[in-house]
Length: 355
Image (cartoon, rainbow, N blue to C red; front, side, top):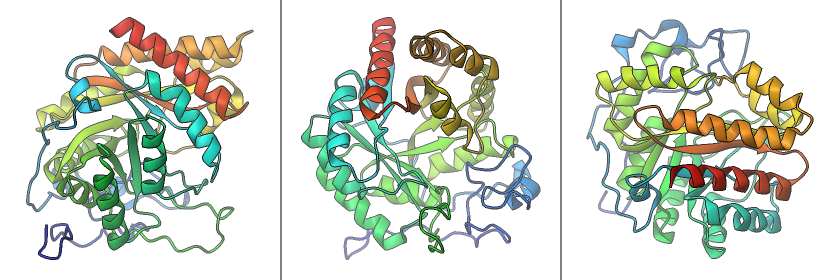
């Protein structure tokens, strides 16, 4: 903390040449399976193309490491007693009534609700959303991206979230805005996820990071997680994997390099084709095609989707180091109420099995 009350990220090496996001501590989670850049599929990601695992940029300090869980009845403390459930909010843009309604459906059966910052769906500022979620009894876990906010605005959001008593923030570099959202809009990328983690941790929040076991460069990503933990990460949320063994292999190797923070495994929640396609459209993740087909081809895709999600959750919770799950995905294209009801049923069944 500086004398004027602001926080300052540690000095760091310059951004890697050729990275459109100007990342210092890359790669981002959006590297395509063939190693192409998320922003432009015709060019290789410079991190995936050039990054030797032994040359992952080290966090220059000060090191923070995993912070103690201090929020009473918070997600981190609960995760020490039983598996926790972090549920995505899936609501239309700038729809306050939908936000409140969905939160009231999923909050009673979730340890926290994750408010996203989706590249093609701009919505209310994170601090405002957090206040609304608290007002309806939800435990908010907010996503902050570096796409639209410079360092100063990120510091403002973090200070506001801390003042509200929010426990944690998912810190991601962020996907680019699609041309259909705001043609010609400036992409900021003043910071990247690792430097944002440090700002969040030094603001008193539980800094959370995303891990993408399926995206290249796979070996380097294990070491990147170590540096994110040194920067202040207290929790990691995995992106989707085709099989739990893929996450298990990733975490075993990460632990061998020194990462020991708790992890939430991503459960794919979908009950129709549009909901499944919305997940598959994101670069960097993987889903089991057999599982997807089984749900979509079922006579009752809603029941099949719920069953598949609970089954995947149980398998992920068997992976050492996984302390909970993130119910991730649109769940249903029928509407935000239907989506929230699907998520709530999955959360209830997970809790019934694990508590």
